[in-house]
Length: 408
Image 1: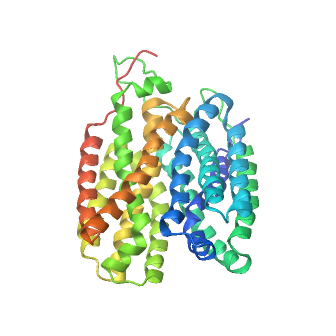
Image 2: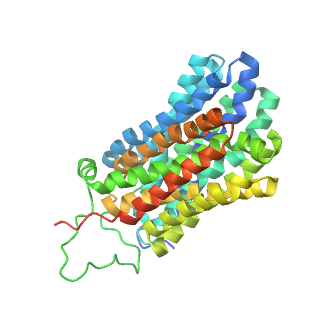
Image 3: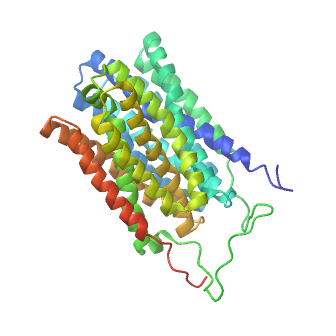
């Protein structure tokens, strides 16, 4: 229920889900790649670069938009993100038949549009729900993982009927309008807002009053920022490696056909989405560090205990679904960590800087998988390397603590 004079805060979760489901269609590049390769004779390497560019500019857009949002509020930034995203898809419908055109339209503009809009509903929801920060963050980003589950089959059917370029035009109109409209509904709570019946934990007797809100330069001066950055790098890197190589891994390990392996990837996507509110809620109960260590432990069991010997569809699907579930957790844990440690006033830019680790992971994880496979002829060696990174992640999570209290 809405508190007197204030909107129902749960509506902001609804707008967040609508936005994120549209933005998550950045992940549908795979449905366009093969038709474009066949139509225009592109190589696999040429057709892979647009998605890589979109990941990089996603992270760049997060930083730029985060700074702007902290000053101007969420609405203008979210609407701008929707316009850029829609423009990118529409431009792709016109010049996406050339490599340079698709790199600019999908890779640069598409990535920037998603980056601008992605951070706004997360920051808004975190501010309205200080009493369940982890769970709500996970719920808000659930849509990003779920969006491609709807967009991929719909887009595949459209491509078969009207071709990839016309499908881009349809996506541009639908996603651009929905993101802009939902973004226009966002607003921050009034200063000092607390949900009815909730009070923040009282500081220990004799403790200093804590300075809650850090400027980005202050955050960058703490060891915690760098610890969180590497935790995110390792956690996202494992998941992105599995997502990027899921089909060839299924073909190699479980002797699946590419179509069946793609079905396993679809199931993984479901668990990727479920992991976000699940780990967010778990972290509200047992703490962010304990939840982070649990996610790394799930990775290790999946990589070495399940996937390494996966020789059936069921076993392979179980393994990559475990990876997807844990990976989804980091998308909820890291915004919550950032708000816990550095406050919500500058969360847009602060989380944008932390999120740059995800952009780096989008390069690191797939490279590890591809290079080890090329050098050894098997993905299993990559599992051992990634499990080692998980052990490092557990150690970092064990030693990471909130910044020491300072005078407000």
